[in-house]
Amino acid sequence: MILLVIPHVMHLSYRRNIEVGYCQGMNLIASTLLLVHADEELAFWVLTAVIENLLPQDFFGHSLLVSRACPLVLLDYVQELQPKLYGHLQELGVDLGAICFSWFLSLFTDCLPVEVGFNCYTTATISTQALN
Picture (tube, helix red, strand yellow):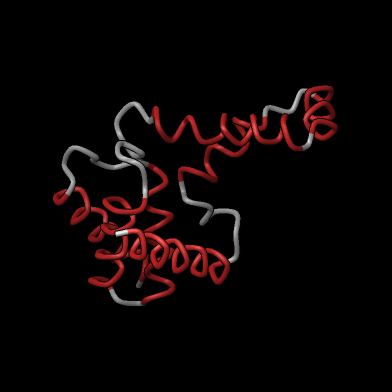
């Protein structure tokens, strides 16, 4: 059932945000929202709120410049706060930015349990509403 609804939610999202278009991580977010809410319209509106209110502008833009910056910021934090770990990753030739880019692009829906991701979205939504 969800597989049939995802394209519809994505099409509606595309129509609402033509300048954003479609980005690979968006389908993972939509499918997770459908698993949590099980309602196509609610999943669409939550996805819309995430794109329009929670994420930085142009996060899903055509260049993905904003979303590509996220792993680089994480890498800076690891280097600053966990220098031993950073050094170890460098010695092993691990490209942390490349590994975690999809995590950011899918808003961690591809690497966190659904319940944890839902709690993160709820907290972010409440925090954003408190700021407005």
